[in-house]
Each structure stands twice: as structure tokens, then as C-alpha cells.
Image 1: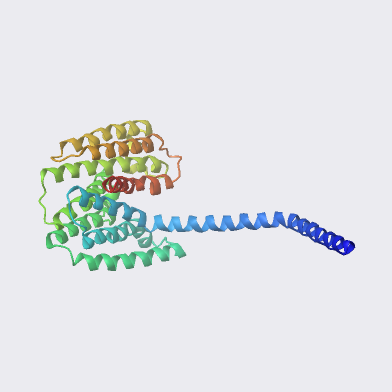
Image 2: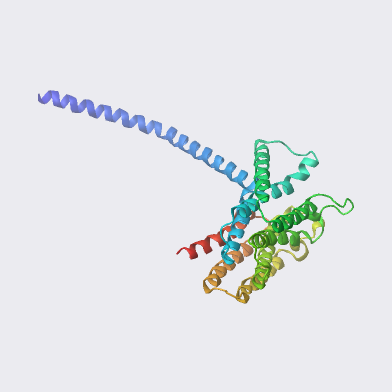
Length: 314
């Protein structure tokens, strides 16, 4: 009995020994497989993020966030036709601006991503068109005005001087006006409210915010922008553009005090926002990746909305 038990124990130890050796020998292969799986996952996430940004979904989410801010500030109930028209309309508009010239010049390579962007754009156009007919008449007319401005910005309506996008020093103001108007005037008009003193103050504040964010974009794009565009960093240099941006944050912040019903809580939220934008300005550089602006800087309106939403639901 003793010898039988001893034999069993010895056999178990031998099996464990060989299994341990097998696991140790396989460990490098397991590590390699895990690294390969991690690499594939990272590549997949990178492709998803690239498509998310390239298809203008991220920028549309920023527009969505600013309209939600308008609802909050002016006590407007959630307006589905208005906000979804703006969201899907932004996807169509931005994709049109980004890819129209390439298609017209027949320089486009029809990759899977680009085909996917076309599908997203077509679906977005259909959804935006559907919700357009659920807007108030005055909102529809103003929206058509912004559409005309987008076409002027993109298409060479005047052959001798090109499109507004390439007019020296003008681009920044057209973009800021469209963003501020679409995210503020359209929701206000669709809710039947008047363009009061507070609305115009908010328009000025939002116009400044977009100008400030665009200047960060222009710093990053300095290495690629044509000299004929005469962007602010091209004229002033990177250092002076940063100083200008930090200076513009002052009126952006203090305009909040002029509102008829300003809240102390909102002042603290805006202060955090100003600090965040200041940091993005200070650390901006033409050497940085486009993700710095296309994702992170573009997320600032979303971050602002999250802060307001969190403060409101504390």
C-alpha cells in the first residue's frame, strides 16, 4: 500500500514537471500572441477613431453639445427636429467642404473609409432633409441662408477670386459666424423666442469661442496652409497668436457678467473652460499631430456641455 501511494505521488510529480516545462516553453509564444492581439485591437480602434473624425461625426457632436447649451441657457425644452437637423446637417456640410474639391478635381482614391463616409453623408442628408421640414418656417429660411454661406465658402462661385475658403483673412470669420448662428439663432428662432439682449451677448461669446478654437487649429495647420491664405499665425507668428488667443479669453469670460440672469455656478464652469483652452493654446505647436485639434480641441464644446450637465444634475 505504501509503495503504491508513493508510486502515484511520483507519477503526479513527473506529470506536473513536464507540464511546467511545457508551459514555460510556450510562454514566449503566448506572449507573442497576446501582443499580436493587442496590436490588432489598437489598429482597429485607430481605424474607428479615424473614421469617426474623418466622417465629421465628432465635429457634429460638438455642434450638438453647443445647441444643448443653448437649450439650457434659454430654458428651451429638448427640440428633437432642431438638434438632429443640426447634427446630421453638420455631417453633410463638413464632408461636402472637405471632399467636394477632391471629387471635382478627380483626385480622390475610393478607399473603404471614403466609401463609408459617402454612405454616412447620404444617410445624414436624408435625415437632415426629413427634419428640415419639421422646423418652423423662419428657422428654415435662416437655415437656407447658412446653407448658401456654406456653398459660397466651398464652391468657386466667383471664378476670378475663388471660393470664400481661400479669401485671405476671411475664412475664420465665416466659420465662426456659421457656428455661432447655427448653434444659437436656429434653436432660439425655432422655439419662437426673440433675439433679446442676452441672445446677442451669447452670440458674441460663442463667436469669440469659435475664433479662439480656430486659432489653435491654425497654429497646428501652419505647416500645411498655403501662404496665400494669410492666416493669423502666418501674419503674427505662433508666439503672438498664442498671446492673442489668451487675450481673447478675457472678453469671452467677462461677457457672462453682462447677462441679465447670470449664475455664479456658470462663472466657475466658464473659468474651468478658460483654463483648459489656455492650456491647449500654450501647448499648441505646428509639430503636433492633427489629433490634437481634430479630436481634443474639437472636444472642448462637448467638455463644456458635460460640465454644465453635471452641475445641473448634482
